[in-house]
Image (cartoon, rainbow, N blue to C red; front, side, top):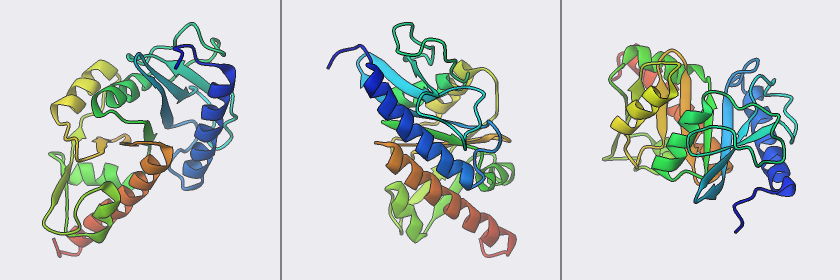
Length: 212
């Protein structure tokens, strides 16, 4: 496959990203202009289509997308070089590179952020059927979702992500910020984000009720 990203290819990726962004915005997980999504276009060299910075995520259009490289920087040879990616594209790129992810979603869902306040060393999930949605076992499998402190330095955040990276756990919680969840494609990443929200919500409620 050619290294050059065509306008038609970027249009398809942008339409998919816009549709997923609208879905997350409808859930209240991408309020205002917050959050960003990405999908891999090439693996060697790595190229990602990332939602453009500063856009209302419920109103994205197919053209509101930027091509970035393995460091999250916009590449010059793209159909829409005037678009600007979020600074968080750097962490998207690091996750895609290290985890081999085909798509990454970064949303500001509340439950995992609250759980990170309660368990800053990592949020432990176990013995729940919904864990299958993360590709894990419903029983006899302990899943610890890593928590890292927030920072505006994406290189530092990427290093912290790599420090705690477990290939079997496709999620990262950034304290007082949001979550990154990834998968082979946008649909799988979305399913995993939805399952993670349920799992963490249950774990918080069960803990508050004194059951765990």
